[in-house]
Amino acid sequence: MITVQRVHWLRARAQSGRWNEEAILVGYEMQWTVKYFEHQAEEWDQLGGAGNEGTVLASGPAAYAARKAAMWRWLANKATKRFIEVHPNCPLGDC
Image (cartoon, rainbow, N blue to C red; front, side, top):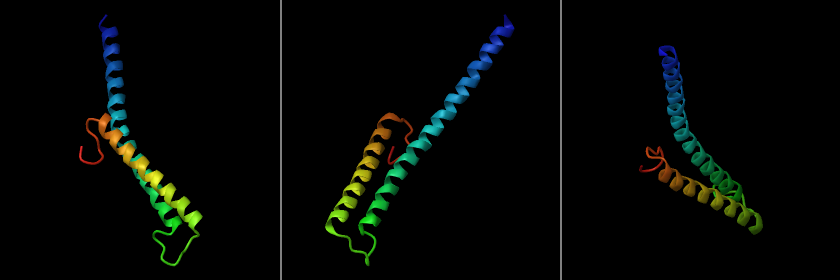
């Protein structure tokens, strides 16, 4: 009976360790997701000519790039708000 209890305890301890590791990884994945969205917004800003002084796009492509940049910024803001709501020790913003 003692062997069965030891095996059960060891399995429970291993599972607890995996859960703790997963909680740490989720925090990092939250940060990576928001950084990726922000990076995409910056890329579309550059493609649209926001950071390039010598490049002038026609109004259609510039509007498209501005819309895509705004979409990525919206996703970054939305993700940050949701991550702060669901993660008690949120690594983003003023948690």
